[in-house]
Length: 130
Image (cartoon, rainbow, N blue to C red; front, side):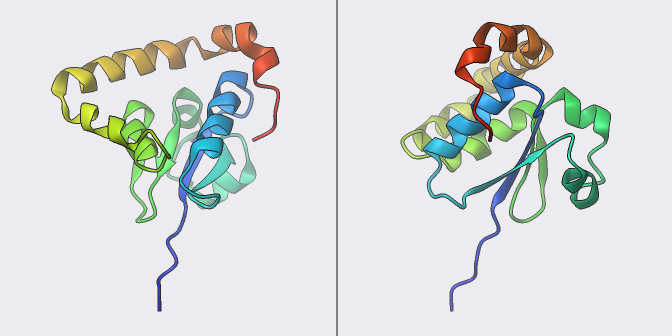
């Protein structure tokens, strides 16, 4: 008997083309087709399944819910995402380095805070639905 692992849930801003593009990239590079479940921050499903994630917090950064129920937000979710991607898992080792953790926080914040401006630039590249 093999236990079925629940997928890792990624909660993202579905109004942001950059965010949608990132989710599509993650989906196309995941270890298997059921590794991730993608839920729009604005959806009723997110509100009913994860009421502990406030609307304001949800719209600020990406949220990841692990199969054991831990919630990681923003840059904290990056190593967990990398662990579940083909060809990119080895990058996780860099997140163990304090300087990378600090830099990823600031880089993530900068991108997240400006995602709608960035989205306008790359809109044609990210039109596909997640």
